[in-house]
Length: 296
Picture 1 (cartoon, rainbow, N blue to C red):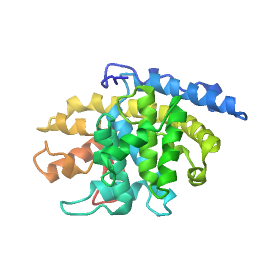
Picture 2: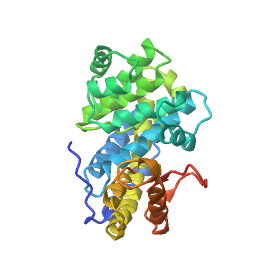
Picture 3: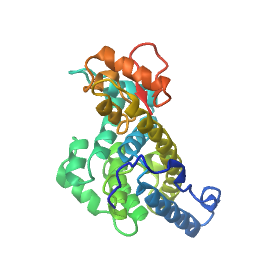
Picture 4: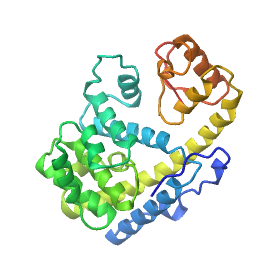
């Protein structure tokens, strides 16, 4: 599946919502759970192919969501705001810390098309051959394949929860024919699910995929509306480098003014971001007066 590029001429309100019979169903049997996850993934596949969806931005926000879940699994207190700070406010030579490194791993996996090489760069502690071997462990339908990979990694290395979840999502993406990894499993699983094996783990993965797909479809529609507002406002911004700066917001969950290299100075970048807030095109994410971060 090759993703379409965001098209500002398309109506973001035309994105089809997940069918109500998927969002409201109570699956009791294995057959029901498997059927609902398949239906949810099929609908998500259609939504991801729509031109209204800013793919890079959506994946980057899902990377934050997955990282927050993984940090919670490890018992650490950091949440989305702290993870954003750890990564987006880093200066040259700074270390992101364990939670920030988890977030960086997820971000690196979604930035480039999914491949063993991409995963090797994101998961620096693993050998490429090892990654390829684990991905090959997955067999069968997409969710079953992802669950098999997740189980294989956690059985051999129970503490490698982040790599296990990333590789499971990679296997899912490859099985579905997606060019990029779309984080789904981490945010839908519970800590106790990672200790399950066999049928119980596959069942947990089916439920997780259904829950996450429903949420991703909602998020995609919300981001489509927000990015449509930004693309409508951008031509009115007359600052030199404004077009390039506005495009950064279409690819990243959070943006520090210092990252807007096309603008002349940090002061100009801060004024540019505040102007976008005034126009309702982006939001200030931290609630602080200094060290601010912005996003659609």
